[in-house]
Length: 349
Image (cartoon, rainbow, N blue to C red; front, side, top):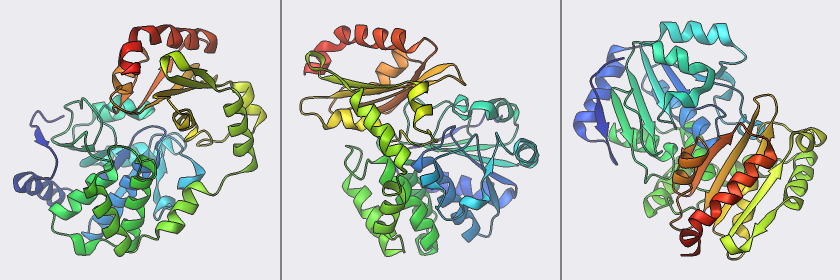
C-alpha cells in the first residue's frame, strides 16, 4: 500500500477534493467495500457512492464481505452488489483488477472478515470514508469524522465538496436517506445535528420518499421476528443499581424462531427505553462462528466504545458499539456483570 497519507476532517477542503478528483480521473476499475455484516449506513453509503460515481461517468462495483438483512435489499442498486462469501471467485476477480478502492463505514481492514487478507495484500490506493473512532492508516485519502451522524452524511459532504449537488438523483437521495435514518436511530441519537436535518431535507427535496423508506426498513417484520422480539424481551434483565439492562438470545432460541440475518436489529435499544437505564447490551449466541456477538448502547457520556475495546475485542462510537466473546453465554454474561462495579460511578453520574 502507498505510504502517502492525506487526512480529511469535517468538510473536505479543496486540496483533498483535488486529490480525490485526480484519483478518479486516473483510475477506472473502482471497488466499493463496506464492513462485514453491513447495516443500513454501510449499504446506503456504498450504494449512494455507487450511483454518484455513475453520475460522474465512472463505473464501480460494490463487494460486501457477507450477506445483509432483507429489509435493506430494496435499496436502489442492490441487485448489482456482489457477496464475497457467496460469489467468491467473481469478487476476487474484480478485486485483482481494481486500481482504486473505497472503504466505507469502517476504518480497520479487520472489519471486512474474509476479505481482510485480499485487501491487505492489495497495492492499489484506498480512500476511506468513515465516522468511527481511531482509524487505521491504510488509506491514501482518509475522510474521518467521529462527530458525523453517519457515513451516508459524509458521502453527501463529498458530493457537495465536488460541487455536484445537482447530480443527486432520487436513487442517491434514497440510499443516503436510508443510511442516515438507520444510523441515527430515526434521528434520535446525539450525533444527529442541525446539519444532519438540513442534509435530510435536501435529500427529500431530491426525491427521497421518507415515509416509504421508513416503511421498507421498519414495517416489514415477519411473524418470526416479532416472536423472537417477544423472547428477547422476556429474557431482559435489569440491574437497577448499575442503571444497566441486558438481553440474551441463545442459538436454540434463534433456531426455534426461524432467525434470519437482521432479525435482532434494534433489539438492544429496548433496554434504553426503561426509565433510569443508561447502559444496554444484547448477547447473541452464534454457534457457527463459535462466538457470542455483543451490541452495546448508552445514553449520556458513558462510552461503550471504550468499554467494548477494553473488554470485548470491539469498538464503535461513544453511544453505540459492538464486541464479541469466545466464551460460553453464561461465562460472558458473568464477566459483563462483574465489570459493572468498576464502572458504577460513571454509570451513576
